[in-house]
Length: 381
Ligand SMILES: Nc1ncnc2c1ncn2[C@@H]1O[C@H](COP(=O)(O)OP(=O)(O)OP(=O)(O)O)[C@@H](O)[C@H]1O
Ligand SMILES: [Mg+2]
Image: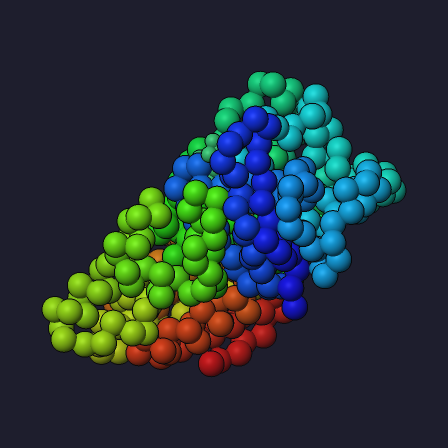
């Protein structure tokens, strides 16, 4: 199913001679993790302004859920409750005086009950780690905090499609990792996510499909590998090949093996090379701090966390884990090296972890795992 479709859209900014969007036909499909790539000035932000009706194309049509966008006030309000765009510059979308007021701005505009607004604000503040700043004046936030606030405002809309323009630019590396993990959780819960980024490594690890823009034109839509296989083309669009892609090509050439299947993550790359016995991964579904009694595991067993909620919970309860960030990848590395490890997971991350472990099969690693449920139940793979 298609969530957003543009048909031959062309757009000129006021007084410009050249179009910033030049006959772009792009299809964003439901549930497909989508990345828009392109150099500075390629037209990524301009494309996103079309997705939520901030600009109207001079030619062509934008369709959302199969319907052409209505640019009347009511139509736009409806559109923005279904498609939330987090703009590149957070200052373009922060209106409230305090953090809390700003996050509630969108839901209040949707005329939701005050109770619903409050619960959405709480959830969005939690997801973006802004709970402690709720009363703070928005003018007094750092740039990264404002980026997170803009995201919180979009999350509070509970959109069907979440579009993020350069979401990790200006975030510290931990927050950037956390944001991508959150994007994965939202995707798993059914939100379609579209991001633009210059960070090709991050995009490569995450995207199911990429679209590449060059000087306002769409020049590629499809899988990452097919695009990156042609370095001259990649460089001419102002981006670079991801380091994981290059490393895999080099290793395959050295070993005389087929570069395919292409690993997107460290654990997939290491899987291709790991031999010998693997450790077992225990996935612990965590609802409360009581579920985290990691002392029950053998001394020296490394532990990680996977999910926004469990990360906050572990931090607030003062529980020490070895891998607070990038927990899945780090624990899998342990297992690939033959050691058992334990991953404390948000409940909705268990299924995600299982599917990622299954993905490793294609790269030659059969990692056994145990799921330890919040009710004390155990399930072995
Ligand atoms: N408000 C504006 N007025 C006039 N021209 C603009 C305006 N905003 C963008 N442009 C032009 O439109 C083109 C596309 O810009 P856009 O911001 O969409 O690129 P981008 O791919 O998002 O770049 P970046 O990676 O720097 O964010 C550029 O040539 C830019 O100069
Ligand atoms: Mg931009």
